[in-house]
Image 1 (tube, rainbow over the protein chains, first blue to last red):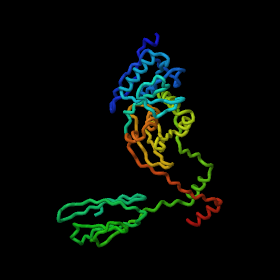
Image 2: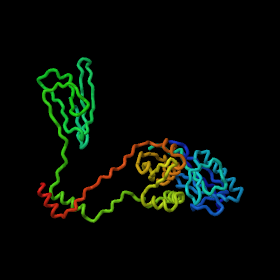
Image 3: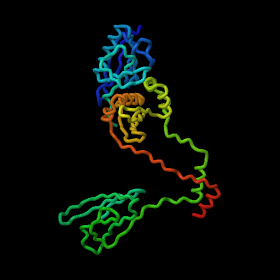
Image 4: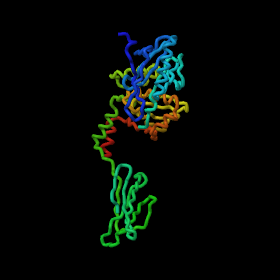
Length: 119
Length: 237
């Protein structure tokens, strides 16, 4: 069965003080991978969630369709409260939050900051 | 009237009750005395022949609390002395200290990940830290990150405390957890990136605890020959 016909989701916990999760559909034009390094000329989303550890979704930076789908997913994840942090050169973390989707960004990490609390 | 005394090796806590007959109220006071500053506590004992026992004050030497006294006799309490070791026990301790040096690890290395989620999270952490820092994390069990203020944060995976260092001195401990069934490394990643981005916001989430630097006590090493040490212990005993 081709992967395009499989509807894939990523479950993200976004509601504070509650175990509820939200399923965000991964657009069909994007691919879910297991590698941490994106292929050449591809961007990657790391979505931290408690079901998978982190889900890795890649898009082709040269394909307008995939860029559009990645932007749509970016907006959906941001709307649910996940904070997108830009990962810099060679995958090293930076402190930069992406306010808007950057199609040339290599890697973006979505973190559930709203679930941080004092222990 | 002294209601309760709790003795430990450092502090003496005791509670007193005072009754005022004119207002018919009782006042409970609690005091804590440091044994290093005072070694004796003097407290009153009721004089049975005295009918007026309704109002009793306490007087403590070398403290700020002084009041008029109305007692006839008093007792003293000395601090507890440490248990005495026999000559053979002392000698055994010295022998053990001279044995092959033990490998004392102050750092706890990270355990091997068995869960798939944790393995994936560690792959991600390796990617964002780089190989060198990731190896230090595996060896030491924590990640150090310098914030924009110059302070260094020592982050442990899971629900561990984040220790804040300023010029090499620990100043506080921040307890911040990631609510939910996340892996320990995911929690570390979240805190790491949060600190990189905004320390003040990270601190606003935290329960803050004071941190104290460990005092480096110099141990006196007895390098005399063992027969000489044994002889001196026997003489002292």
